[in-house]
Image 1: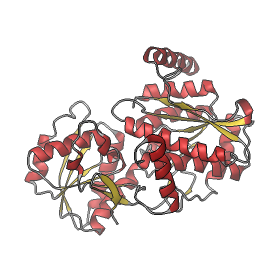
Image 2: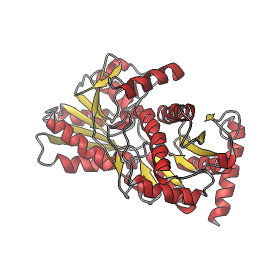
Image 3: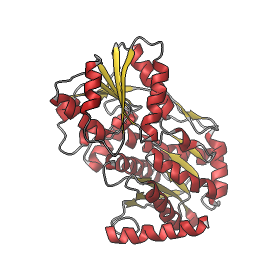
Image 4: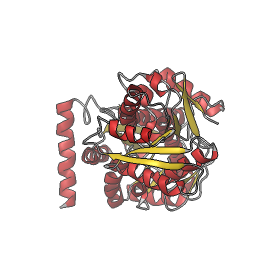
Length: 392
């Protein structure tokens, strides 16, 4: 019955794509290099390429594309070229599964995705059944890697919450902290819970913690007023950038100017349509990537990204770039070949992931254990003059 539903889901995805001129036809965000069939490694990507979170999905697709191009130009993976194709899920779990089915029909062997947590969790139920290797660049909820075929590049939600509390404490950024979080989102609520736990015994006090949901995410005056009345000199925002832009706008209107501190979901706030980016001046966020870093790898990536897409890459682009190179390292370690079945390829890469060590844009050293979690160091950036710069 489950297989029937999946076939119907794939069919529905194609019908929707034709209607919307996206997905299975000319509107799809795709990029293909090399041959077809068993002569290439077929890597698929899934993310929100349209809608409120498009800054995330497009960054993932674009960052991965640069890595694919570089690898193919350098001769491929052990001489084998990569074919690459992406699908839009519009930040919707059901559509993410449909996108997965579409990519499977195309012949996908390895998945970079899904971009966001809820979508990645939904898709992982199917990659587990198919035993397909899944590497999410940015799905940070704990359950994104609950199966042994799934790994991630980014920090998990708990790690982001813990690291944020530690960073605020170690850098003496606040004495009183307010929190505004999305109780309807596993990403936001997961980070919030670990932040509060880690805040115990630190040199700051959590003086307000106010929730909202996606059903009431347009007016944050109550949450902001409570933080202001409690004397919060820093407001922690473990939320996505679209909601954060409204919070900053409304805080400015009411004359409230604390330090705002976010996590990776804040990355993208400078691209929000009709948002006054001057209001983001001084905003800090925990992120593994700073576009102003001076190492050769970052400088070259930022240059290529700017030339190709006309903008500065965010951490989601960097995560996805690293993801493709991580897959390359795992394939090389395993001695995998493109004629292997999806399941055999997955088994080979699962073993290789716990043996490789990679250097990328998001960390000078990355390793993994069987849990699927990366081992890497956190960093923070601050927005100055409309750009992200290293906070340290």
